[in-house]
Amino acid sequence: MATVIPIVDEIKSKALEVYVKEFGDEADICVCAPGRVNLIGEHTDYNEGFVLPMALPMVTVMVGKRNNIDKCKIISINETLGSENWVEFEPSPRKSIKKGEPKWANYVKGCIAYFFCDVPCFNAVIASSVPVGAGLSSSAALEVATYTFLETLIGKQTKKLEDKASSCQRVEHDFANVPCGIMDQFISVMGKEGYALLLDCRDLSTKLIPMSQIDDYVFLIINSNAPHKLSSSAYCDRRDSCYEAAKKLNKKSLREASMSDIKVLQSQNVSETMIKRARHVVTEIQRTIDAVNALENGDFSKFGQLMNESHDSLKNDYEVSSVELDTLVSAAREIEGVLGSRLTGAGFGGCTVSLLKKDVINEVIDHIRAKYPGNATFYIAQPAMGARVLTI
Image (cartoon, rainbow, N blue to C red):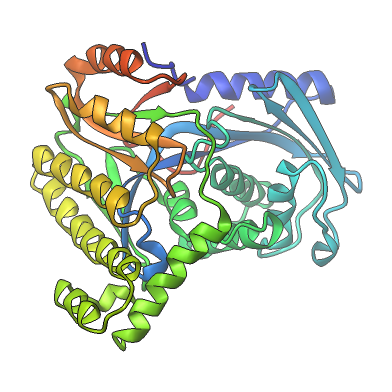
């Protein structure tokens, strides 16, 4: 069977219990923010294209209270390691907050540093069901949960949700040294139950896409548990190849390119690698648009077909798949009732996402376990809610 994702109340209860145990008091603030899976639109973000993520039922919870002293004291409960990690620091002045150890605390520090005003000192406990290192955006969940906690702590909300997401992205850039796009933070902030989120990475406009007939289907997320092998240099090579292709076409970005422009590149005798990279981006942007139309029409079969085409393009043109991911995708596609399967995230490790009918879940899991030599982990998900304040 698939791993049972702990419900929010279970994670909240654990965090509240630890808070009482460690601080001798009861928390009066409780918030959460979800991880995400990108359904389609891979490596399009830095090309000013479209992405289509959905929020997951896996969340990071943060509970706490003002402590009336001059330091913040925070505990992170890491279920994987079975340990509790402490951090203590002064949150003021915000501009003087420095990165350090443990690394998870840098996300919290960064949120305070880039918050829209000073915050009082507080005690807090953080717990999460978002797996670390799986490409399901555990870092954005932590950032957005922290930012939501700070808003609740001072009783003021960021005026624009876009600004909240952008601040959390800045944390990732400056406090974690990860030059990520904006997708993860946007969906964690803006996710809505029963909807995917179309994000235009050129102007950062968003549109909630209803999944009105999703009840008969689920998304099966499979963690290959193979470490990401896509180095920063490989990522930069692909990004730079796209930028260079756009430049040769006199385009601001490949968002403005079409398949006829791919033929123009071919006539310029550029490298086959550049042609393949550009072709993936151009076709993936169109696939994302088509996928939105399919969802709005309730056509999940078409959506699944586009997922398959996306993976094949990521494998053959963008070359960011791996033996592990291809094995998982191929095995999933062999079962009738699986509408589509693809890698999700940057690639070379991490997870796949498959759209399938509910009544074949067990058959798919059993088949993949028989075919996949590694120790895969399975999660069943439907589009969930974004960041929110929880009752205690």
